Length: 254
Ligand SMILES: Nc1ncnc2c1ncn2[C@@H]1O[C@H](COP(=O)(O)OP(=O)(O)OP(=O)(O)O)[C@@H](O)[C@H]1O
Ligand SMILES: [Mg+2]
Image 1 (tube, rainbow, N blue to C red):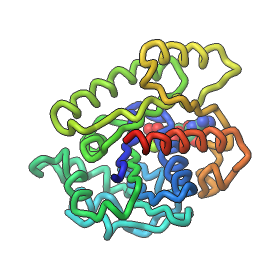
Image 2: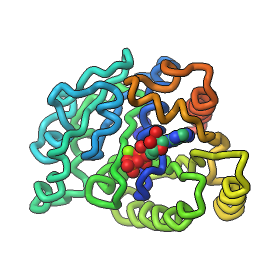
Image 3: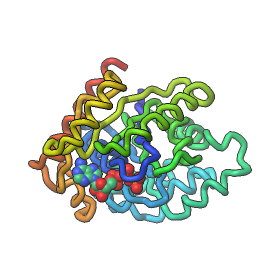
Image 4: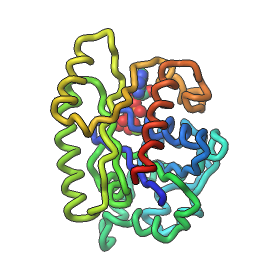
């Protein structure tokens, strides 16, 4: 069974793209066949991975193009990417007259040979818009990165309620992979307090892995490489490797 994991949190800068790229590349490193779909018009994941062939998820959503036709090669050998382009910002309008516009991506994925991939990872924009809803409707799971900052906490309730709405109305199979605490800084009391608040409110929904604040993670995009290649001995690489192992361990539980 292909796991389709949406990486979502409408709060900007919550480490969605950092998580999508490093998780996707890390899974490839563990011999999983991975397709990364970039649904964010900012295209950060696409440019990080050098996927700029002219292919775009815009054509998949707005022009009924098959997913296979929009796959670009990336700087990570074995990682296929459906890149984003700025046109994607207009996809919402292009989809306005489409019937069941929330499930276009789901339909396109159903038309592909999903057996070709073990994982489809979908990076989403910082908004609860039609693009993000398409990702949640197409996904079997949603992973929510949360920045270790007190301002991030209010957003968690909102994304949970959106996930609940999608589950009840559009995709009853959607599961929460978990919340991933990111940019955790053990030196500050603040980070620790946010961690405790999340643990007390969402205990078993928190992933065990915590991603620490690490400058190497912020540098990696400029070098066009995932953290495991750019700085394999960094804390960032250690943490994302732990995430990959935690995600893989869930395969057996189904
Ligand atoms: N653990 C970390 N340590 C240091 N910097 C980080 C870490 N995680 C993410 N960053 C940096 O924080 C910024 C936001 O991260 P990222 O782009 O992954 O968030 P995002 O949720 O995808 O943002 P957007 O909502 O704009 O799409 C980036 O500059 C990124 O390099
Ligand atoms: Mg992003």
